Length: 240
Length: 254
Image (cartoon, rainbow over all chains, first blue to last red; front, top):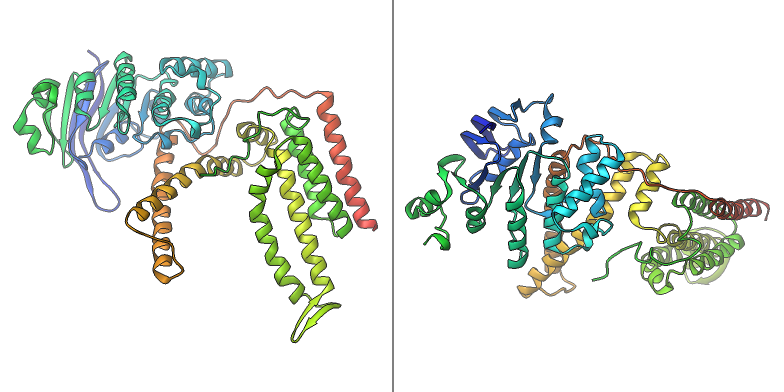
């Protein structure tokens, strides 16, 4: 399959001196679903932020065949959707419609195409009746779904999700997993919900202290008790 | 918890609710301007009566208006305490070394009447349409984009900020914190406020990242709404602007 993300020797240190990534090499193929697992501070979220060009470390990051630089940034961001862990950060506009339309409007689409994208995205997350609701009136589960719609409206090719199921009740979690499984785009999911990652992703990348410790088939890596425990994780119950 | 939702009654039906947002914003803004710049006490009293009538016509419950008015009243109270004692002029009462002047009382009354009238008029102006309609109307009126973004983000995140404040106080109360009038309470509250600022700063960075990841380059774009203008909108606008003009002219004459 076509390679759509190619990372070579990526290193990143935060301004306060914390080294978050030290020499990441990773390739992702089209329509793959990859889980990023690892303990807190492993560098999962930092890696996701590099794929959308929000952070820029040393090394090479190619997304959809384009090098991440100022020239390609707008085109990359229109194809790579990033859903943040806290939906309050994603839903910064007053209404659901304005939030979902924010990305398409910034790509200078015509009005009818923006409205069409918003309608389709809301249908995908089963929230089509909520377009005119205020973001601050939504429940947490609804906010998560709308946060997902904010990137689905952008005709994306790569979906990046940071802890998509955190703080969700079991029903909302199940619903979100079902939605995510249905999307036919390349997905990279970072999180601690290992059962969800096992359910959605066919490959996992285990990160610890900014390095890739293991990269391979989900069941094989997540079923390796000694490997998981050595890096502050546990084997998912369904694999025991 | 009381949420400061200015558009809580935007769903009602009144002459203000059906008014075109752009004409409404301009007309009532001019009326507010004519009131706050008016130097006459009689006109200011009339303006207060007029503002009450307009709030009544907007059908927004007075209980809702009064909740929001309490801070303005508190603010005006300081003028009433300080100005009669500090502005020189004809004495009304003298108690030992303290004297209350007519001019001070007059200025304090003038400020209070104008402030209350202006705040009251905010309700028919902003409380009779959805907040997103206000934002779009401001954009159509070519109000500077940065100013609109400031208003929008303040309103959007005030609810998140209040929720975070509530959670922090619950966490403090859960560890047997009780508000008292002592230094320790002040220190704890200062620390909580400090933490809120740090959280706000972190959230700002995350929101900015989220905006940038969806193509934000510093200018807020929204879809144009299909604002329609009809004769009634202009008629209402003409009526309010005419009142503003009358108030201004009579204020100068009297």
